[in-house]
Length: 574
Image (tube, rainbow, N blue to C red; front, side, top):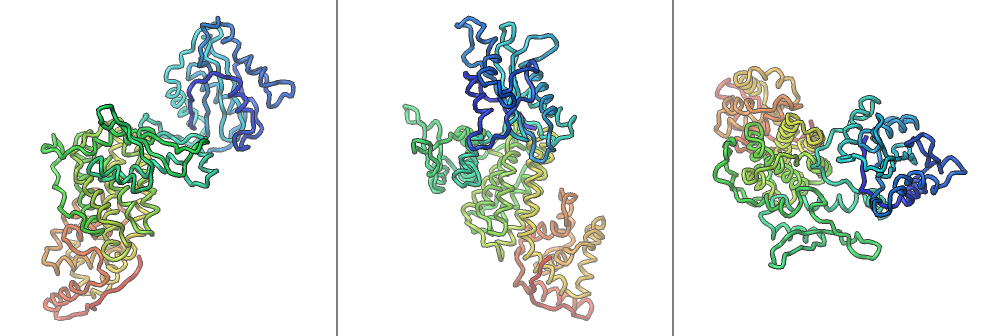
């Protein structure tokens, strides 16, 4: 249940005309009162003898009783209270009781013998009501409506529990501004799936992801097709910016511009500049992390490998660093998701985009991020953008699965961090992002893991038994679970590749399994495959790999005198 307290107005009759009218798009049906300050107010919707003027004069009477100079100009208080989309139908009686609780909680009509304002609650749709009140009490005093929005939110949380409604996570004031109803209706008229504000927010987020400075940021905005206006001081210093979609115009045909701060709190120019802070020499108590690999713009696959490495480093920091540093890493994780969604292939693009949009809410809290420590993640986002779009097959397709796998665990770590801090909305957003990432991973991993699975099936009994022994010796506590998973064959092929490359498979496997978050994985063998291939520097895509099969076959022949391994590659699906 979502209350929305609007700015105070000056014309009671104008607001009543809207509430009882057909709506801007004929969306209002059967407007009528469900409650009022005295329970006997005239209802222009149901009583043919009652008029809007009658109701307006009744509500305004305490205001008009004051001397003209003492009447507040902005004397109209207005809030809407909307049920969640999956809530049951509420009766007029239930909505009336909700209205009475809201005006009491906000100080509009506190009850208990204390002076209150006159108010009326109008219902003109199944899922919400509007409450209109005049901000002068019966005794001529002003109501104590300080922070009425916060108080209404708190009361709605109680109402949800008592009525068995969908429980909305409490907010903390760091969420991006929701589109107004006028913006939503405009988008519908224009045939847009989203409002201009939402489109601009996503485009600006993508433009800032991994950007090295202001010039690159503004160049990206222009390249994305946005109209950009900069605000400068008399000295020539840049103070701010605003953006518009070229085809989003007002009634006068002029572009509708939005300042960055109105898109999201962290998209104002001062907050964006914080991201460009130089890397710090001292992590001030944070867990030391490896410097980013100098991959540079080496193509999609190199960028995705770097992303997986940076995500692993960030996961350690979030678990161990102080709050300000952890908040910086979580914020930069949002940049990586934006960059990955921007450069993803068609079969993963939609879910990665949904993950990035969902995680945007999780990237902000009242814990102020201490920028500079998050340089590895920001560099990973930059490498993704500069590496260009992925084709979705071959090595860059497989490394996409590798990157998504590690980002899933990073987002899960952010979820746990927010939950421990009591950040309900952020934790819920991270959980939603993790689900989208899980779906994106399944799409990205099907082909490369299918190829590994087929290679594992072709290892032959002696070689497969050899890798089974390695598994049981390295991770005895996980061995039976892994052996029961379909992904075991892909892991067996990976262990064979590691041995062929000259590494100790048991040592690497024990190290990979000792890392965190395996308990949140649907398939432990999948996670170990990507961790091992990344740490051993193996190709992520093995569709055409035969070297490891041949060498492992030769080793097994020396050991057992038999060679049942079939060389070659195979494609398949999990």
